[in-house]
Amino acid sequence: MSDAFEEKVFRRGRRIAVDVGDARIGVASCDPDGLIATPVETVPAGGRSQARLKEIVEEYDAIEVVVGLPRSLSGKEGPAAAKVRAYAGRLAALVAPVGVRLVDERMTTVTAAQGLRASGRSSKKGRSVIDQAAAVVILQSALETERVSGRAPGESVEPVV
Image 1: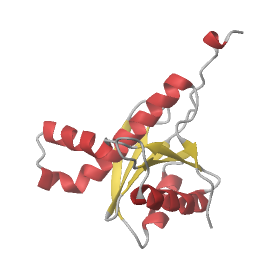
Image 2 (image 1 turned 120 degrees about the vertical axis):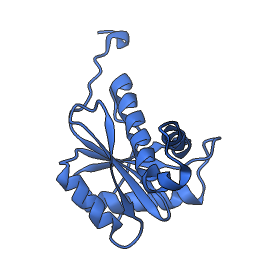
Image 3 (image 1 turned 60 degrees about the vertical axis):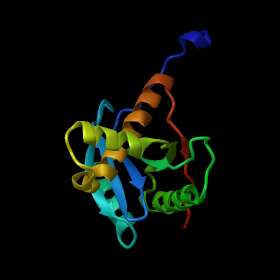
Image 4 (image 1 turned 120 degrees about the horizontal axis):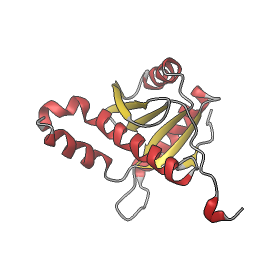
């Protein structure tokens, strides 16, 4: 069979996406067929955030957690990316055997903010949901990437204890 006709497989099951910020963590989920991402909640960063994310993973019976990795427009990683990598490693240990993957999240907050403005929400009113909207953008992009390529998006995270 030629590579041109390689069968693309999309894994069925709910995924959870998280947009990790210093103050808040936006959470989104998708339907079991991976067609559409929807907002779940905004979790306060720090303290109990990872315990709450574990609860959400269990509540949704997720097959995977997708974490947005902040990069500069040129693709370089800075201190924010290092924080997210460390957070994702700790989360991977907590939610195992559910896998955690890092995906590029360049421009997701900007895209989410534009969507909120287009729907008539002001920046002030949108603060409470901007992180959820960014998580939706992250997850929808990851789902589309997997659907087109037939491979899980981004890079797998090794659990850090």
